[in-house]
Image (cartoon, rainbow, N blue to C red; front, top):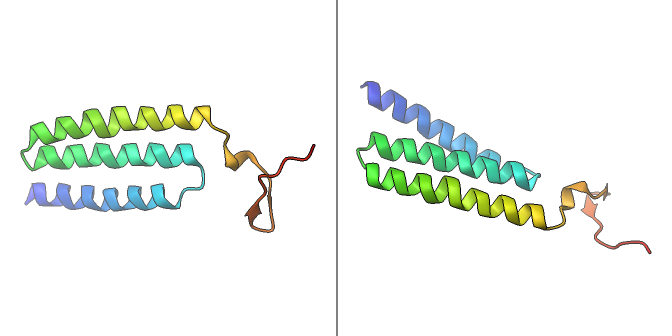
Length: 95
């Protein structure tokens, strides 16, 4: 019964984190939220007595994927910094 409560809490936290990752306008915060989703999944797999899957999810989902996305965002131009006019983002640069 105790594990069912923890598992339900983690499931709700997982859904909230995934929703936050989808709705986030800032790419970096979205990537961090997907890392949190992977962390929660790792704990859930550990509770389901699948330590090999939990370790794989932690290594790939949290570490490798999050680091790759953060490096990619750092090396590209961020649209969040541009001014938004009338709901649309202008990519044209005035010269």
